[in-house]
Length: 260
Image 1 (cartoon, rainbow, N blue to C red):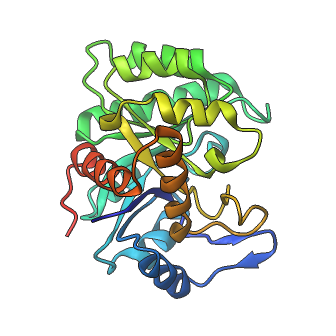
Image 2 (image 1 turned 30 degrees about the horizontal axis):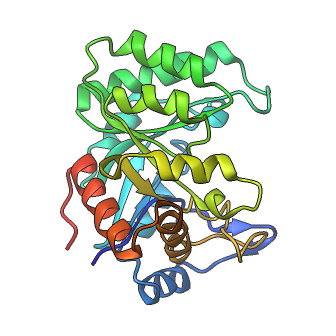
């Protein structure tokens, strides 16, 4: 049985003034039965440091991309292509739109998002999409850049509701559930976790953020994806083992990897 954390940030494990040591995080993950992880990039300047930490780890995959709140960092298409060619890269992400803080130009976010979609199409890599308070614009950019619907990927840490989730699923994308599913007031996420087809479901931590109950307020880490998977199993009235098996199979299929 495999259990995969489909979205974590091992390049920077600092949260709330605390810094987790990577070796301890990996040991905790192994003890919790978390066999594999996808370490997600958020900007190009930090990529070399992040990749250097996980390059020799056989059970950790990686992505390359610019997060919508990091669009002010250096954009270099040559570097993007260079990084995307690294052997452990399995996705473009996390990319998308984030309108929560209103600190960045919506138009600029859309332009950078669109360019990265074009690169994902060219490189034949799946997407890791971040969409926060921007469901309609995220959808519009996707449809404009990929009218033939060749792109595949996952909407990570999804929170846009079941109606929009139907559109995401109809387009062939996966949806990932995070530790929010354990939060007391997150009934909408539990409803989503119960609704999602089993063959489109992923689980994640988004470490070091969004630690699940009973670890809220502390740095999150991949070991805690076990809590997410158990919470998803509970709302679906199924077994933890079934969620582990399904989400691992989905991860392998989407990112075209073999879990060994």
